Length: 470
Image (cartoon, rainbow, N blue to C red):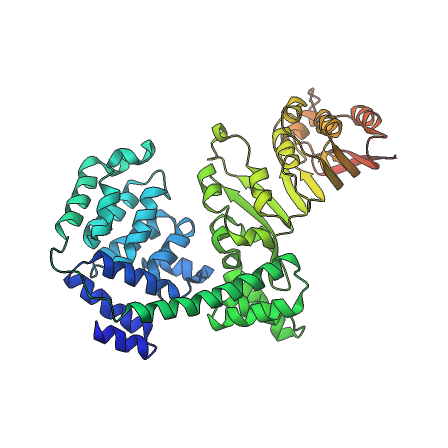
């Protein structure tokens, strides 16, 4: 271990890790592998840009440090085909214990509930790595995995990976790490101090994006780690043409990476930045487990506007999107979009958020707006400066107002679907609200909110506007 200790004293951490991995390959020691896992995260795991992700997807390889962590971070963007190619490529290289914690995390929280090729490639890498630290997890058996995944793995595949890990157990004496331990501990303390300062500045920026001093010091710390987000924040102080051009290029290439763990679920088109800091985002989830996996992400606190949505893969057995839990961590969100039905609207009102000022709903009739979907929820007192909902949501609005919601300005908007437009074109009956029904809704709500503005329209045009004060 003296070679690795000398490299650490000389400041060559990557060289020390390579030396320790060579020792591990000769004698797979759990203690040695754990030490490697302590050294490796001392380098930041920077997200890849769009072009780097596209290149990794097509070439089947990732460049730079912390490849397992970067692969795990970008799994959704690389897609299964790209991830499988990378896993196969590393199965052809020398075993590396740094894959173990990622492989184990996939077993505990499967990133894909389908994909035979992905799981075969992952288990092939487990068998190739043959890290004894995987024995405890694999000993739990295939039944410890979600039922959707079991058919893609198979008993034989699982047993083969377990046998390979068990056969690699080194019966020799434990590695002597006494010379390395104090050096690694000192490096960890230094990194912990840097991380603590970065976290403190992050919170200052999240509380007040206009805090210029905190923002620029935070940018300097990011630049020390060669994080392009630091460059963008610094460029936001300049107004010259070159700075604006460079800023646009950075946002296009790395914009999603500025969302940290939320990046795989953030749409580039919905990302809004101010002073180089994300202030608004559209985040789309496929399952409730994905929401749970990122609830502790600090980047929620940067957002002032949030559009939370789900794909068609969302399991409605899990209920509506967990707005209350998300707003519990996204504590600075002032504008919530899009409430697509009464249940979602009620869930937002249940959050108890003290920062929330506006709720916007989708102007469509995809879901009915039923009063009971609001009245059955544990609503908390909430004051909104602005509420924008479809005119079909009157009953849900009244139920919320009766249970403690107060609104300064209510906007009832309506854009019928193309189907409604076709029905109207050919003279068929439609359930789209008419000017009369909207006027009736305004009368029911008048006096309960500060100001009402109601629209009557068809598809992409507003035909009439009704306004009423308190």
